[in-house]
Image (cartoon, rainbow, N blue to C red; front, side):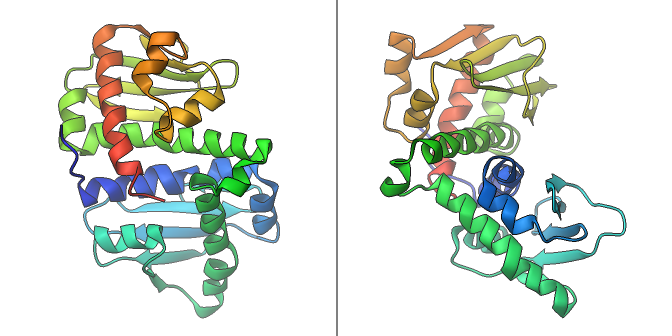
Length: 259
């Protein structure tokens, strides 16, 4: 069994799956919206990480989006390596900011508190999980990270690419019954995460409840045991679902190392 992880793949996950979940955090958590409430005009944060595509998040009073807003000021966060970026996500290193001094206040007053709040939901304390609303939001955010990480591992990880090569074109639904639905779109063995239901999935992984989802993602429940008793169901083209399940197993190795 391959258990080693690649720091470059970890950085892809941290950028596109972990930080990519900030938008959902703002949608669901009032405290996150409050941090953005006084953002009078859009502010962009550009991440410059060696070996990764340049990416930018735009922060507005109404939410967080990928891409650049026209005429919006940009703060560049530079990193010396993927390891440096991963340490920033872990909270053990600082980025190299490039911006006008007055823009740096946005980093300390908005961006840093947002990422700290996200970390609280992705790595919850037992006391926080005693609150049913917090626990539900924590599970939903964690599932979003895991689903987005599926695409990164399928495209960038050696083992993930091997599995993706055996998946035919089509969509694989990732569902929690009656709660939410995402999907993974496979085209020419390249995966794209879509935070919306697929109109015509060729396969599906369906969790029966959010509690089951959280238990499997946290490693507290066995996916095999849940499949045997129906709490986790697989349907559709077997080669698609089986290989996505293999990639999901690889995702677990990486998420154990991320925020």
